[in-house]
Length: 510
Image (cartoon, one colour):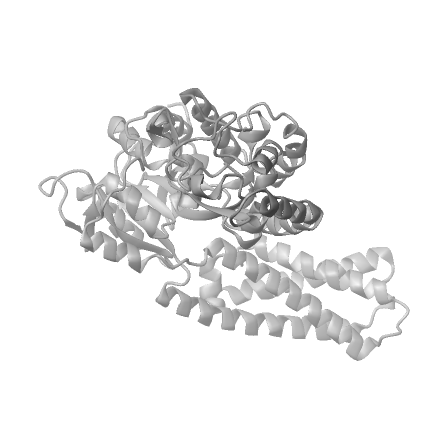
């Protein structure tokens, strides 16, 4: 049998199969599902983030230990200061790299320090052996204090031991109170779901918390309780449930051979900002090893991954803060002049607040300079602004044409409701030809898998301004989805730098 990668096949077919316009109507959850969703509204700590922070803490601790011992024993005015600092820095980084390759950075090792301390000790010895060999071949080993080196070895390992014991206690406490976990929902029911749940629960050091099941089938074909977990509703209700609860993963408990039903489910769920996995624990088909990920030893096919997750989200947030502050400083004279002009031109507030769709379809409040007369403002944007629109003030026409009205959104990006770059947020009641955008485009809400942006890939490609045809919203969605699937910090920087140039084209801005 030829080895294939099924996740690409399922992902592309799911996007092409427009079986349900997910999110086009507000779905009401049943009382039990609502109660469970409220229980899981609180954000959790990602295990990936915890492991990353642990690496940084241990690296910092080894550096500080070596530097402190240097100042305590060798002295401040030693002639080989930078030689010692190079050894401390290189040795600390090398130790962390060896720990990584020897499996010292996984949740099992952190939760059970006694089982991993032997590997940590051997890795620490290997680090010093590498340093000694390097000093020998460079003929500089005689220049360093052997007492300092021995003290760093002993104190460094002692500090690692104490840190690991403390971390294991914290991790156990966080695991008990739900601070660190991956929340999963099982999609499907019956025997397949029960086998899957039993298999996951048997995995040692399991960080998966199953929140419940969703299945379209009735209680005769899909029992209301499976392996002790309740069936909380249908697949349509699952979309609304995931808008409320902070869910990390959806696991589809269906055989791969049930392709039609699997595709039907995925076409409804791919718009959600969660990892989607297809359980492979009961399948006899075997694909190439890279097609699988694992929960313990339970194999999964990775169909969709949540975009801009874990450390990527940290990097993007840092990008937003830095460039938002730069933008506020650079454009503050223009914003001040605009505020004065608006006040002189017409009565009313300088700023206009509008409800728009944010991350995961949540409603957010976006700031703009007011460009319409107060009594003619349209907070819902039900009626799009057109050319020579009488609702727009004289100053409003200019600032809309030049996109100056959007500058207050730098503050949205600074405080976190927007990102600097991302799909542009649309008003909650925005329409094209008297139809809501989600009624025009299948999978429209997939734009909300990431935080919306002040500028975006669609805008710098000419898709800005009035949306008066179905084709315009389709093209915007197409470019937005391309951005989400190909995101990188360099892509964000490119869009940010191109934005002022592309704003010179004001043909579609009214």
